[in-house]
Amino acid sequence: MALGRTYTVTSGPYTVAAITATPILMGSASATVTADIQALRFGTVSGSGVSYPPNSTAAGVLARPSNTPAVGSASLAAPVPHNSSDIAANSVWSIGSIGGGTAWTTAPTLSAGGGASGQTGWLWSESIPMAAGAGWGEWVNPGAEWRLPASGFLGLFILCSSAGTATQYQVQLVFVE
Image (cartoon, rainbow, N blue to C red):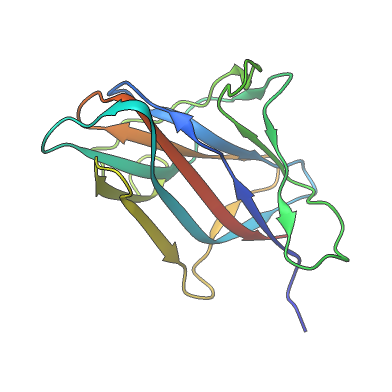
């Protein structure tokens, strides 16, 4: 018997050309919803005219935003249920402004934390080489899932050591409500 309904949400390719933390996926929950993240994946999806700085890395960071973000008018990501008979997810997921939509009226911000998981809102982080096809995926041990709390937010950020040109990233989360 399932312990909940399982969903996958994907950000879609998102261009990051800065060394500041860039939010590319955010989850929000109402007062009656929680979601437990069981797996996450992130990777480089080569864009057109892409350049990768030598000896550079990109870190994926799952964190609780240090501010109170607000979802904009567009760029919602629809979680896909693993079972076709399940209801739509109750949590709301949004992505960066892809296709001209306004993702956030107040974008999520990443707190300073020195890069270590668990510090100042950081739940997880992993670095990959800034190169075509680089990626990382991780399943969480049962009972150790990261929680999107009721009335809370979670963000997945990309933090690059050097600015590339037209470098695209994509993230994906598997979660249970």
